[in-house]
Every structure is written in C-alpha cells, then in structure tokens.
Amino acid sequence: MDDFDKKILKCLQEDATISTAGLSEKVGLSTTPCWRRLQILEEKGFIEKRVAIINKLKLNLGLTVIVNIKTSKHSKDWLVNFKKSLIHIPEVVEILRLSGDTDYSLKILVPNMVEYDRVYQEIISKIDNLYDVSSSFVMEEIKSTTKLPLNYI
Image (spheres, rainbow, N blue to C red):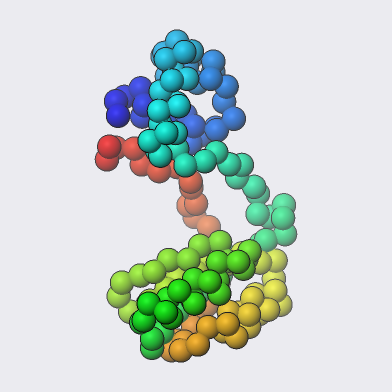
C-alpha cells in the first residue's frame, strides 16, 4: 500500500463511478498502471464492492431509530438465532455487537412511528430472552459518511 493506492481509495470513496481514465488523472498515474492497481486492491479485498448511496429521504425513510438491546442469554445458539431473526429485516440497516452495558445496537430506518412499531413488534416476537430493548430517535444527523480514514495503512 503506497500513496498511489491511498489516492485511488480516497477518490473511489468520493465517487465510485469515476472512469479509470479520470481516476488515473486524479492520482497521477497513466491508465494501465492505475487500472492494474485498482484490480489488485479489489483482489486483496481493500475494495469490497462499489455501490450507490441513495438519499433516504427520497425513499421516505425520514425516521432513524437506534435500538439498544440487552439480553439475559449469551449462548452461541441464542446469537445464531438473533442474527437469523434480524438479518432479513430490510429496515434494520446496521447490527452491532457491543461491549459494556448494552449487548447489541441496531440502526433502523423507517418512514414513521407506525412503521417503527411494526418493526419493533417483529423483532421482539422473533427473539427470546430480551432483558431490555430501548429506542432512541435521531433528531439530527450531524455526520454520516461512508468514507473510511486511510491514515492507518
């Protein structure tokens, strides 16, 4: 990983639709070496996939809910069931296992409170041994980015 690779990753995080010619111009390489570096970054797993970031408000997903879950069960079987129960709910866009007082945190995107209640009911009906489920409603999104810091490689 050198400065050219970092520049390629930085540019792709800003615009994954950039052409190889445009990318090579931005990073200061000719097209073929830039294309080859891009292929290597993909092969080595630095680039997992290229996606479009969709405006959630245009999709009527104006309510973001952070759900913190505590469980009284910490077995492998419980965790497998937990994952299987949540992974296919499209409104659940993030699932994090945490250390500390909260065991899991979910990020849920819905249009309104009625839809959130429906998702909430679906979650609690599928998962046993929930000790506490608490929801926080996002009032303002101050920073949300998909750009990862590149200064640790």
